[in-house]
Amino acid sequence: MDYQLILNEIKEEVSLLENEGLVANYIPELTNVDPGKLGMHLHSVDNKGYSFGDAEEKFSIQSISKVFSLILAYKVLDKDIWKRVDVEPSGDPFNSLTLLEYENGIPRNPFINSGAIVVADILMSHYQNPKEALLNFVRKISGNPSIDYNEKVALSEKSHGYRNAALANLMKSFGNIQNEVNDILDFYFYQCSLEMSCKDLSKAFLIFANKGRLVETEEVFIESRQAKRVNAIMQTCGFYDESGEFAFRVGLPGKSGVGGGIVAVHPGQYSVAVWSPRLNEKGNSYMGMEVLERLTTKTGYSIF
Ligand code: DON
Image (tube, rainbow, N blue to C red; front, side):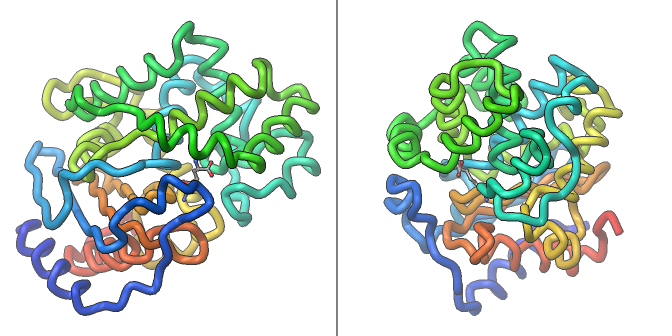
């Protein structure tokens, strides 16, 4: 498969499209991004990379970080993690409070904000320095030691994080949060402020295309059965109330973030990341969806 040729064609096609999305503004610091940025990087399991545009520029990965924190927590608790957070799509926006009260403080899945806050709580209980543990893990699986948090973005979200504070407090009232709410939120906001490029992200997500192992060394990061389950959750819950639409249009497990990034995985083949900061009304990158739909159409392969 000539992936570079396909990426070049996609670049040409989407340059003619009008981008109908808007940059996220509920985290003030995110509005400082150039809305015209567009990058894509695909990394195959035979360890070859293909790119176009701003593929090596770092951006705020936001909710994509929820996959990294989930893997770490899954390694810590294994299947006991599912006592604290469920694996069902919510059909609701990522920051919704609605179901949480009906369902006794157990979030529907680890990718909505409430679920990721529970995962952050699990990591805080296990690690003395969870920020450092998460950062080291992400640097290792992406092979880039320069990856870091953006403190300005973390503090910007912290000063406006009323909904996440409400979610954490509600779950604490049900006994599903063990640490202090302010401490968990601090860790959660830092986690979301991680900055990575499309290249970093697609390299990091290769473990999901390669049964939990690094492609360079075959070092096992998560068990194959765990990689399978995280892929399943990405497929069913990775795009909140647009997860069905993403499965329908693209047909790959994936995860989005309000910084405009989307990562998707084709198990056994590749992982791919796209960045374009303007979001659709569900909080997912408008152009990212267009690009990835074209990728699976042009290659003729998805998981379906
Ligand atoms: O908690 C929040 O609202 C953000 N830090 C992350 C949300 C997000 O990225 C949703 N993704 N599409």
